[in-house]
Image (cartoon, rainbow, N blue to C red; front, side, top):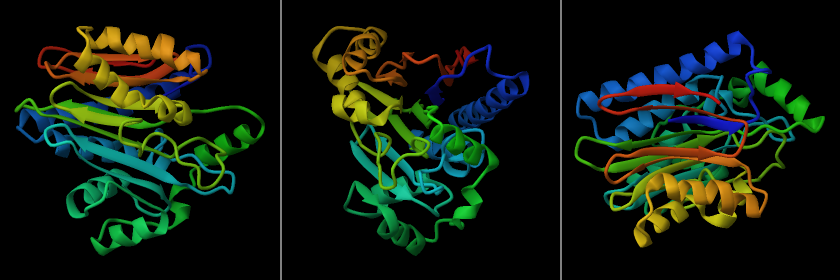
Length: 289
């Protein structure tokens, strides 16, 4: 799982904030572990773990989403099933409490992959997904971040989950509030299948975080899958090419988490930090820097 790449540093992060991030990652990770131990399908794990993170205002997704330059949330999410290549995504939601549920609904209950804005919300409400007024999403943290961004600071942030379940199926999902102070209507990589999210049982599952425009231009999530499909590189070697060479070539910043078809976990980032945690049958860890 990841909680976004950005500019956090040991020097700038208070002990209280460090604890909040680690506790949030731990809660989400333990939820996923418990579900997998009970033989839950990977897609269900992706949804439920991301829902926990969307409910935690420490993360830039759902309740904790950052604000656009009108002071409103515009949330994006996507999900993909590596066993079928089915996918669903939503963009520019302003009232749906759990955008990842909306993405799953698009995948399972429509003929489309991506729905956006108020028509997407009408679709979600027809299936009785939880909604709230925009005030629900206006946290003090988001308002402070908007003010800082309008004073020229930058912040990235997204949440994502990649799972290889007990049947060997790979699933991936991503949810975000986007970039603080973004122009209203801007959509990043998180809801774009192949850019911010990708899953294929034959190769890997990927969830990305960072400067979305650059991830879209490089189709980063699918690029990782393609490298594994057409070369003999390991998943970590493939990630290193993307993070250390391809992204810097267009001044892209961010990171990604991934699992290959054999269950190998790997990640990479070229920012100061990337909130992340992982679990295998024998080991688990939570890392920030």
